[in-house]
Length: 159
Image 1 (cartoon, rainbow, N blue to C red):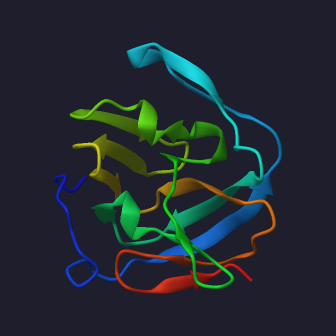
Image 2 (image 1 turned 30 degrees about the vertical axis):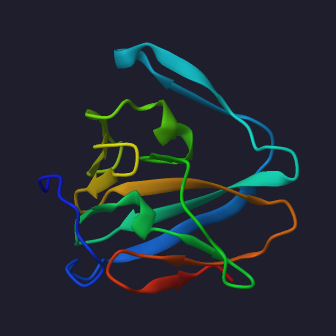
């Protein structure tokens, strides 16, 4: 696992990643972290919906700010993930993490992911090779998601 560091797109090596899930999530999403005794549900605000993107990380690893994974909708507007995890069933909302805390998940696949909240504005996502990274976004109900930007400066089409 890489040491937590803020890497810009120009600094991040190429990311070997394939989108495996890209869809709207109907209803609530439950989350739980027994280690810190936090559980609850994530629900979209009125007029919005939840949208999930899962990435299968290949031979590369990832260490980047969560904000460097924006979801792009038609018209070019970008959204930052509100939750992250090692799969759709392992999401945890980043706003429930106190500054200075880290969450690690050892996945069913070979990989490991970690999400560290350094401050109110800095959240680092790290993965080992062969991990699954799930990102949850809240977007307008009528929006069409078209791409996911990655920290290496590339984008993956969602169409």
